[in-house]
Length: 155
Image 1: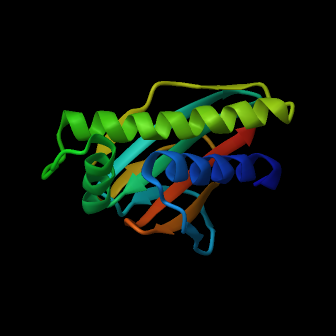
Image 2: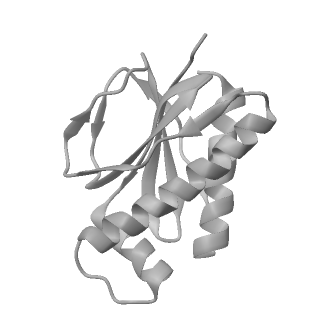
């Protein structure tokens, strides 16, 4: 998968997590590539990408990290995955992807995003139209989660 459109996604992820959650130490684990995505995390936020690039970016969070993120964003004690939690985590994904699309547009990719879709549950097979999915584990002060990128050049 082309690094010139993957890197802006990670740059946006780091920037937004730093700005919204004050997470400064974000470490990238080894990226893997797969043909099908079976999420091992409970909260999955899928945001479609349209235009010069097609496919989806999926943020996969363990339950405890999703709760911690929303607790930090809202200042409230959060104890269960509910509509408020999925809405807040979806909005975080939306902000990250919006920032990434801005950078991609500056790099001459004309792209837009679709509204987030929420997939709750572990071991769900998530179908994407791309032939390969890059899985980038990230480790933060809140814990580990994955950014899954299933994009292809639409030419």
